[in-house]
Image 1 (tube, rainbow, N blue to C red):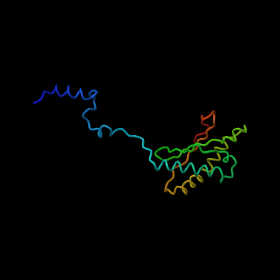
Image 2: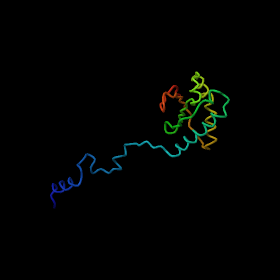
Image 3: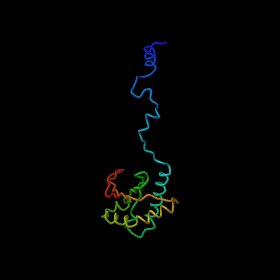
Image 4: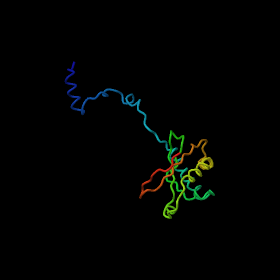
Length: 151
C-alpha cells in the first residue's frame, strides 16, 4: 500500500493548489447558480419589433408628435414579458430648436400602445406578444442619451 503523503505531494505538483471544491462533481457544484439566458427567438422578436415600430411611427400615424420619433432600441425584460421600446426625437427636429413637448409624446405613445402591439403581432405571427413599455430619451451630446420618460 502506498503512502498517502506521497500521493498528496504528487497531486500538488500537478495542480495549482487544493480548494474546497476539489473532488466535487462540477455538475453538482453549478446547480445552484442560474445563468441569464437570452433566447434567440426573443432577440428575433426584438429585431422585428424595432423594424415594424420604425415603419409604423414614420408613416402610418396621423399624430405629428409621433412622426418625429426614431426607434433606437427594443429590448426584452422580465423573461420576455415586456418589450422596452427606446425612442428619441430625430436629429432634424432637434436642430430646429423647437420646443418639443415630451408630455404630448408620452400621451400619444400610451394611446396607441395597443395598436402598436397588434401590429407587431401580425408581423411576427406569434400567439403572444409581450406588453410594450416606452422610454423617451433626449440626445445630450454625441452618442449620449438622457432618459426623460420611462413607463
